[in-house]
Length: 204
Image (tube, rainbow, N blue to C red; front, side, top):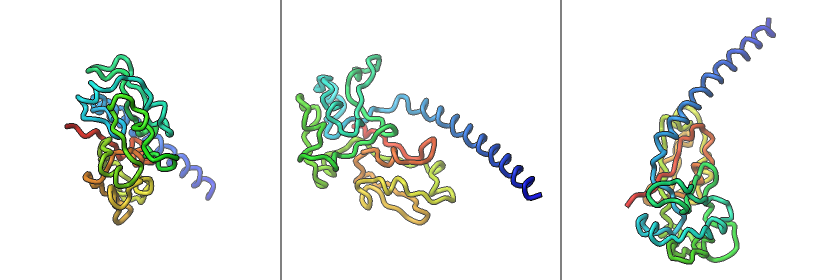
């Protein structure tokens, strides 16, 4: 009888898993569609968007220099003059702020020949003052820690934990926009699918 009950349990669990997985997949597609026109995330030290677009020479030296391969070239069919400019996709790779790399400056800012990326020292003070890739935002309906689970993966990944992000009961994260630099480490580490935390560009 115990074996029968166990088989029934496994079948029920599988059915629940399929239902949840299917819902997540559909939600992911909807999320992708809704964020398709979002402003691009630029590398650390980027000028304001209009100035960046007119100053960046599309040389891709920053893309090549990124030790974590977090920067990619915007496709050639992108509208608005964005084609060929560097951008970030944190879910694939986050900016690690070159913290484990040798040297005194963030690598992408060090190699930029045009001034589209301003030089940033690899110090906590300079990073906090000058890096404005974006700001992380939490979807409280998706975040496990706000829905009867305990996670904390984003907090443990945050290089400015305790300032850009704090954590409460059930490891519930809170973003502090004034301190968040938008590195994307939280988004990359989120174990939820679709992910419950995303970095959005700061528009000026």
